[in-house]
Amino acid sequence: MSADKTADSILLIEQNPDIFNEIKSLLAFIGYDTVLLSNTDQLASLLQEKAFGAVLLGKVPGETANRVLRVMSDQDKSAAVILLNFPEDQFNAHREQWPFVVGNLTLPLRHEPVIEVLNRAQSLRGATGVAKRILGNVPKLGGTSAAVQYVRKMIEQVARTDASVLILGESGTGKEVVARNIQALSSRCKANFVPVNCGAIPGELLESELFGHEKGAFTGAITARQGRFELAEKGTLFLDEIGDMGLTMQVKLLRVLQERSFERVGSNRSISADVRILAATHRDLEKHIREGKFREDLYYRLNVFPIELPALRERLDDVPELLQDQLDKIARANQVNLRFTTSALDALCQYSWPGNVRELGNLAERLSILYPDSVVDIKHLPAKYQPAGKKLSSPPFDPARMFADPIDDDEILMGSDSIYPRDVSRVNQAEQDKSSLTPLKLGDAGLDLKEHLAQLEMQIIQQALDVSGGVVAHAAELLKMRRTTLVEKLKKYGMSAGKEIS
Image (cartoon, rainbow, N blue to C red):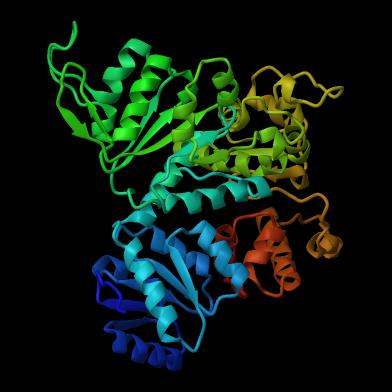
């Protein structure tokens, strides 16, 4: 048994020369050269210069696996990644976040597991730049609740096949996001993803939209035109709001799914269709079948693998992370930063969200327009988002008036400098130690406020590092900020970076 190689070199990221020699010997026997990289600062340039069959990621002091994997995802020629000796829980977490992580090998290496995972890596590598497309251009399904994790698992499992998928859920829950992730993780990722909203196209035009038409096929058909099936050849056709498709069109779609061929309107020439079908609807199709509005045979053709998305009201624990995703998107697109207080976020976590994630995104954008680069308190939320019995009159739009009553920084919970909100149920040691900070003493000579605030910030950062055992990622979590933001502050103040976690 041998691996099917598209590149004859393997990149090993490791600082232990003994491990390198062991791996190099085994891979040389299989037929691969091994390139050692111990300085990950050179990773991006190395990946741009050379294509590798796979990247073996070991332990590199001072570097997190996520940082390395993020660099991998940014490279058009990034190879599949195989972890070395990672704990099972870390491997599963990395595999879920970075779909190009294909395996986890234990040392000493054995021949059969290495062959198996290299074959898996080479299969993934058939789609050049797949990691960039998956993690860069395709929106993610946000949230960490059990329901969302289950949906992610279903996406991963069905993406490996060509099975038809029926995505169910209320409007605004992210059905197209699921469809795009299935496409991006599938073997069809290099081909087109073609969406069609069946509810937005009149029934008499939908046939031409899907199958195309010949010149003169009907009034107004002055030229021949390809349909969506032809555009999606070798790729994926996403039929959104399939429950709104008329019965006549359902019959024609069923025929295409059965025979894998179709004719353009006005033509009798059959065109083969190698297309994967993903469909979505917010309708109750089983009820539609009973009412004679949807064909049962088409339903079973589409419903090979159902994925049901939970409504946002069923996973309110995800609201803080979803809101932060929206704030990050707004900050990148419009350079507008928005922050929320504890009370505002608590109110949003109690709201029922009938419009689901789409409504959450619309609210974030509206608030960014009303209060750019400001702090949003509960009184600034539209009335319907304020808890019953606690509705406050929203001030007229005047950003300058927002700070008439200053908001304590301890109440600012989320914004461009923090990715996850404060867990009010957890009182960490760093917060308990705040009482030990140097008190402000303003003498007759005054003080340098900028210097004092810098010293105060350094003290808090050092406390967080002490509490977290020097692990930067844990310290950043205690301080409610991004790890990268904390790293920049450590550099700014010349403080020890402590340790990183993989």
